[in-house]
Length: 208
Image 1 (cartoon, rainbow, N blue to C red):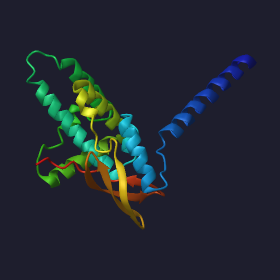
Image 2 (image 1 turned 30 degrees about the horizontal axis):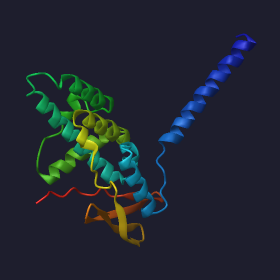
Image 3 (image 1 turned 180 degrees about the vertical axis):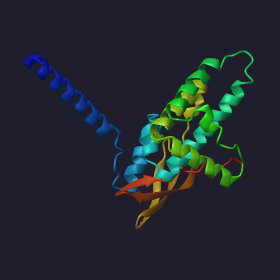
Image 4 (image 1 turned 60 degrees about the horizontal axis):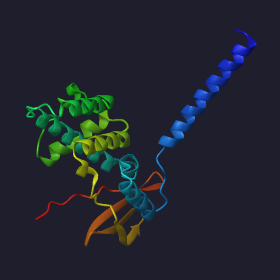
């Protein structure tokens, strides 16, 4: 190899290594030093519709649950599309299939998930899906963006939008507080995992 060619090759390889390292730093979840800090980050992410960052604020168990729920919603959307005689959803479902396939949730993989209303089966389904989806924050971000494309109201009015954290109580590696938003207060929990605080995904309560 000529000297100039060798130098050029070295520079290109160094550039690629630099890009890979930068990407790794970018994708590494932020370590939040307190429940308040992770709550503020989650609230900001909600306002900015940055659902990847929002998912990174959640505990691993909550990420697993959210991933399972969105995969289930996606399956339902495909079912509705089958009833679309005008074919208006055809292109959108094709985009959804690309996202699902990208994250390993192929038609064959989803066939192993049994639709059910039983809490135990739902938990099993979530675990099955969670094992397949390696990058859960990325999956959540892409699916929510897709849902917004189908229904622009899907990403509005999240549980943390314009919310405040009140009555925070920290006990060891656990903490509780209240989310005050839109005239109501709901309990929220936090856990310290791997030296940083994460948030337990708030449960959406059915309206009476």
